[in-house]
Image 1: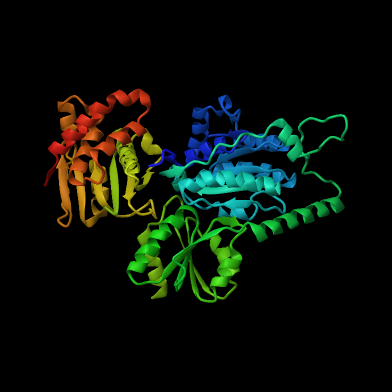
Image 2: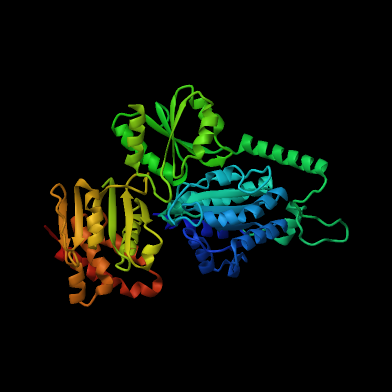
Length: 359
Length: 181
């Protein structure tokens, strides 16, 4: 057996991957069910090895604004929290999008609204994919369904953030954060040097030399004519993301008559539902959107030529189901099943729901 | 073995989560796919704790289930709540300490282990969960004792490695004292 395979929690995987992929700084404030991200980083003490900064700061708002500052310097920086804490960060996320800076934000969702519960939920879907903060911006939202993907998407998330100069979010939930699974960690890659940052990110505020004008990082533009141009540029960028960054996974869809659509931990549960349904002779399949924004709209639409009934399974009151309905555009029936407030649906429950709707 | 779905429930502090972790590590040592899904949060501060551990030769789909091949139950609250969650033909193992209403199902195999009493008797209350683990492995030898010891080594911090022989002894005690009801 390879030495590289390890067993760890999803939250720990994010922390380990951040250190390994050359992250420059993490800023966060503890909250269940994601505190192990900060705890693991503190225990690993990467400031002694890679030089990565890890700070437990006074609030979620301070954390996202430190990310704003770090990103402005061309640094690879991140923050993480859970639902109520992510709400606090929304102003900062909007500013970072408006200033066109790269960063990674991790939300390990718990049940809301308000302080809610510490148990798993997916009720921040709208917040993540439809804005959250103010203004016309989008972010790529990655939904991991395994501990392995928690690590992989940390690496990928930073890459995408720097490709597009835009915040990227990992939208996980308490199940994926707290469970332990096998994982192969990404290889070590060094942090960028000051020289590399100067060369790669000429927009960054790394210290002005005499031969150039100051770089200014700001989301403010008083002149509306200019601000419209800036927005149009953002929109072109978002369109590129929609064209190039859709990711999804299919499970038993080749001969499927009915298709479940689920993301994150719910997609894992639905895989089991598909197994159970197929044992009972029901031709059920599963599509798992990996990017929740951009949503795999064209993929779902293509399926409407052979599948006439979709089921959205979520741990919320029905959020992604709206995007599925937009995607199938009236060409297929879409039913929704969800559990709320931190209750996780069981595989059997999902099968029973499907059966009740196709009977 | 293709897939073994194990549910362990008891009081916080009984070693429920760590016993599950050792099982998961043991499976890892044998190259199996494993998942370990704990109840998290207030349980750590007392009250009941539970964990679902799955070991499989195939890729594990859902880490969360509503019925199990084997349930290991260590207090009355959990027994009352989860006796019904054992698959028909499955296994229920319970520790008798503090149990006022023993299990009644006839469609499952019920095993009793007096691990709490034994751990007090042999002055090894800290290895209580290892006695339970031994009992379970006697009934369901899904991983070898060798893998369990490797798993222990992997899951315990190095400063506790001197405790491994004591844990091994406790596992063997558990294998001896479990019996079918």
